[in-house]
Length: 312
Image 1 (cartoon, rainbow, N blue to C red):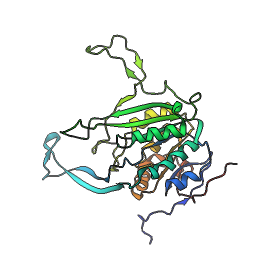
Image 2: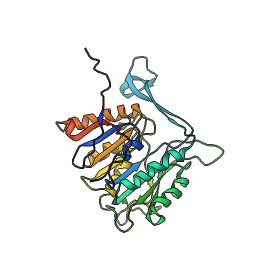
Image 3: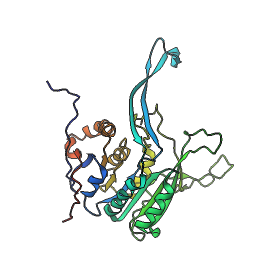
Image 4: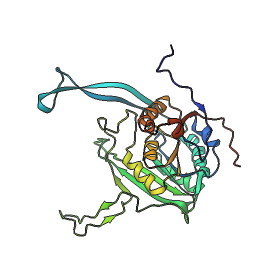
């Protein structure tokens, strides 16, 4: 009898505008080169930050235990159990020889009214700005989003680092999607007052306050560097429409796909880390099963050869 937990063999990548969303296992550059020009209205990527160390996370769960060290509701005792370890290497000898060709492909794959969101941190974001200016043109730079959060560094000899940087570029500065009425608004508040005198809603600024994914939160997958759905929801609502194709070629935990699916968009997720692919499958499968036919909604496949796809 075959092992029920055996890893399924992925199909060869075969993207079609009318086809299912794709989860692609393999080298992202090879996969990108096989896709036709001007395919995606929105590209969000969260590449490795080049931190110089392995990113590791253990999944955690809390169970009831008579000998547990934590006291809960009605005197019940609980203990926290450490689960499986998920990791990836975040060390690159030549980071930009790795990232530059992938960013060039991202420009090629954007539609004329498309938008790129590049998510990095202080280590590489300044170099990224210079390079993206060179391939998009500085006039195509739209915003830099500062995502500020409440967990992280506890430095004592410098200011603690508690934000990421998201660079936003448009393919055509005279023709791009920005759905300001679809984005979650922020309530107007007068500083120092407990009341809201006008009650008006305002478009969020370029500083986004949003907590990270808690290790004990309902969104958690156990994947290192998982990004919160709230951040991706705002991006996808602002820069795409229902039915649009969205690309994330550093898919990680699959947050882009999970939010895109919930908002009625199609997506291509690419990652070569087996832990990423396993996490995405688990994350998306409960929602996809409800559609009645998983294969019509999403397809798992392997990266095709690195030969460039010729449109038409």
